Length: 121
Image (cartoon, rainbow, N blue to C red; front, side, top):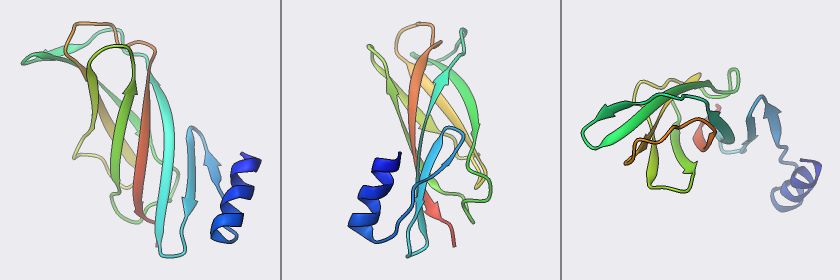
């Protein structure tokens, strides 16, 4: 983390990477915040809808970072066809995320990378 802070400060002038829980984020001078985190899905059962099997999980965002609901994207680290989507019911403080797969596989242990961009001021 210290190396990343040094690189960002050199490239962008005094930018600091903050850490909170699973999250690392930067506050840009233009009012945007860029936040990244990874969460492990520990759901062992899934629900079926159409041809997809899905599980849901929730994650709090860094406390007070965003002033409005940010945009968020997710990717899954797995060895099969699957995807992550962020619910429209997410808020400025909280993400609701769904992991879906085409096969009925146990989602336990799958890592979901999250990228969140929004306004901090």
